[in-house]
Length: 227
Image (cartoon, rainbow, N blue to C red; front, top):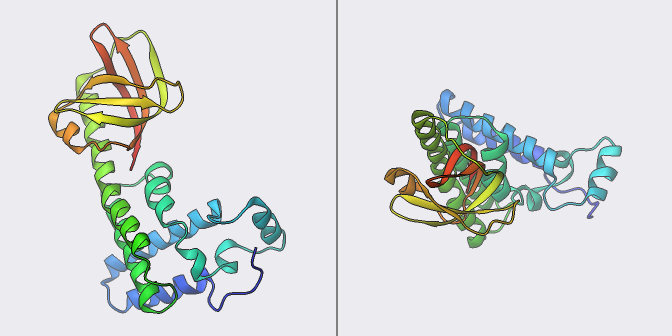
């Protein structure tokens, strides 16, 4: 671990970023920016991306924090996991907040480059852009699936598998899943409405329950979807 103090800590960078945004945004929009930065700070303090458990113990035992210790070189290290995992699995919020998360992180990444705090890394920008786009889309898919399952009623089944699944492939009105827990390499075809199938993307993570019925595999419950 590099123990030298950065020129600007993450906390200080957040403060500068928000000051700049407050000067140009409406109060309503600024509140969204402030809320997303608060969530990102919570993520950084909980997950310590790019640093080991030893770093965490040494710093926290000295009453330090992630955002009060590290600087610009660490502020971008959690962008992907924050958008792709934390927001979809740990935050209960509507699609508007999910869209705001992508917008704010993209703006923060651009601001850091413009201010000279980080280099213009094309791969980081592309990754943030893709994840920011997919996050609200995945949450809309979750809402659509939840509405559809609520309308179709309970499924009578025998074998059920609960956990996380990867979308393996997609058809016009079907999806196939791969269980990350049970070892089932292909679960499907699972019938879904056409608009749901079109919204599904191979590789997305679906948390929920599937069941084998007399008519084949069916979705029983969906808790979250992560890009």
